[in-house]
Length: 369
Image (tube, rainbow, N blue to C red; front, top):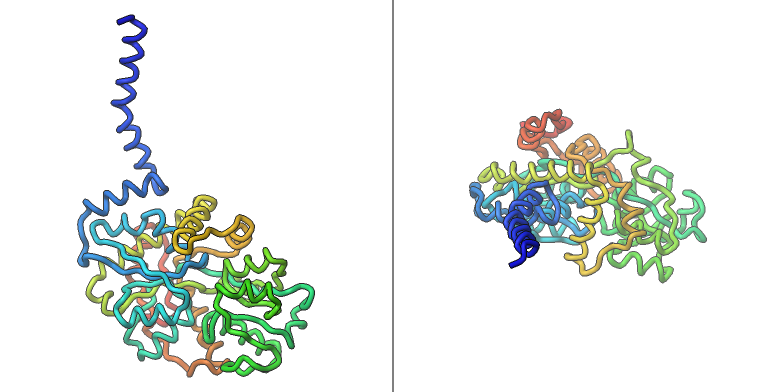
């Protein structure tokens, strides 16, 4: 064998021997597509917590991107070790609350209004809010040919996702602040409020059956891509431009029986939010990849690029804004004056935050006594 051939062969064998080491080094470089395979191995071989599995619920919405990314990148599963993560998705808060009450899920990402309604209807026995997840990401988008100013909204047909949902309550409160009258149940009055599923709203806008919508992302940016104009960002109505749009809730039964599993999910949520903040473009792509898996179609670049900057990912539940949202629902006639003391249990979250060297989150006096 010629010397050059022997040299080439030795180099090839050395490279082949080094390849597993290189792959192992790449897999240890953090979260991402390569890391996910490594995390599945960790889950399979890791120590099982007090439950064999945990059932997690969330929406295929960008305001639930903590859940989308944490699931897609395997961050939750890595923290859970040998405890299996099982995921269910929902289109609306009430159905997720029903699943929690029925024991079909243990932990969920959900908006403030369904969390409040679920807690009050059960007389404080079914759930606890254990963390925040996101703030913002809600806009009033209108047909600019029909509505040129905020005052022009009067007399128009505006969609919200569902009677009594978080955006519905916010819009009814804004209408009331304008001095206009709307019957909260029927949606009839100085403004016609049409409760329309987010999946249908873009088609309703395109057909002209609505003049605008008060909706979360990515629905708002879908309307913008169809020629709609953002007339108001809800963040502008709140002190510091912050208000809770997504909470993490847990079944009280599951929390009592499996606090270690709840803590592991919260570690995953906190680490996911930190990863999103540090890797915005990668996180945006990750969320979109999960949306494609869940819905069969990713968001277009124009839609996701317009939506992503308006959402702030935060572990703080922004508890004071939850009380304000409850007050808005009472004012709209959708809720009787609630007693929300006990709706928060932030000890597991604050334990996780302390371990990360971060300050504790406040329950604004609404925590478990």
